Image 1 (cartoon, rainbow, N blue to C red):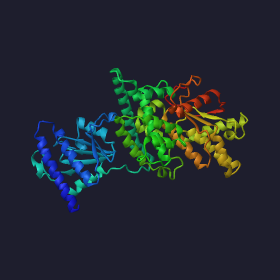
Image 2: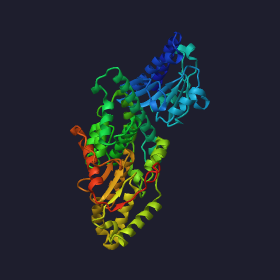
Image 3: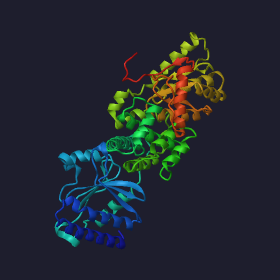
Image 4: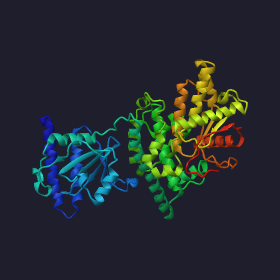
Length: 504
């Protein structure tokens, strides 16, 4: 460390020691006594590292984790990490934690940038793994005062700089993406539930209807898509819709950190109108409770590098949603029946169905026949529809030549329909389908892909709800889904219904 850095750090630690000694002599709890000195120390470090706007959010709730870290630290308007303070003398080594501290650590360790300190020992963790060695100070906080010194100034300088300059690491593998994104999606879901409960209490106390933003949003969401959705279903749909809309934006190479969420949604309209509009509607009026979690989610997803994830893989998204649910909510995966169907099973079902088209329904071209319409009523991430696209591409190449593939696949895309109940797998199906059409140089239908977020078993003849024009894209999607259910002559119904449903 250069001498000027050593001087400011030595001075900052000395000031920290003097302030801690004075505060600890008072009547307050020890861990609270060292908070103000800690804030000053990190603000001084931020100024030295050209980070002039280091801010603190105290007792930031992470409802799904059931804990409130002492601080969420904001730099340049973005949350960069969390700080958990223990009383002086108490261990900050997770291997020695017991009882409540152990339980707290098990809930916090998934965070991407977490600093533990008791004032004289400092440990930095990323996703539960230690970063560097622990840093210790030489003396007791209650006694040392201005004489307090750090054992290794270089190590402490590195720890502070690493913590305050955190930026999400680039994500180049699906397995890493899932581990990084699913916990943040859980936090967002919990924030929605907490907000709905807070608005319910506010309504009981006479709050104005216009101030109950999420209650109104949930009501509109029910009218548009899911009439029977309870709070938990809405919160889950909200969190997954926002998370996967942002992932879709990255597949289109849209940068997220310097772009507002509304603008991201607008840019998604070109190829992913439903998800783009959902992102806008769900985030236009977020409260402060959501800003911390949303900001962290945006920054982490902005680090996703789809070009690396796709490289050398036939289908990089094949297991994405099932793997996501395993981390996000294994119980939800079981209840929703969201399980990957092996490719061998899918391809055999697709082949057998085409045999029926040719031998019994007089369609010698199988799925490539222009009057064959195919519906997957429980689309999931689109595995059956994508297998049919590959099947038609292969058939066209064998029977007509490689030049016929784009036109054959483009024609098929106008006759494929998929219904899906959950926003997450719907988004994955949409991005997989878009990728597949691009791979075969096929054009998307002018009216868009016929993939819909809807309950296949809903009555298509119910009267349409009248909602504000801002919901137009979602209203139109529901209307088109109902038209397909009510009037489209379907030739093939193929798919794997959710395992959680009893067979009909």
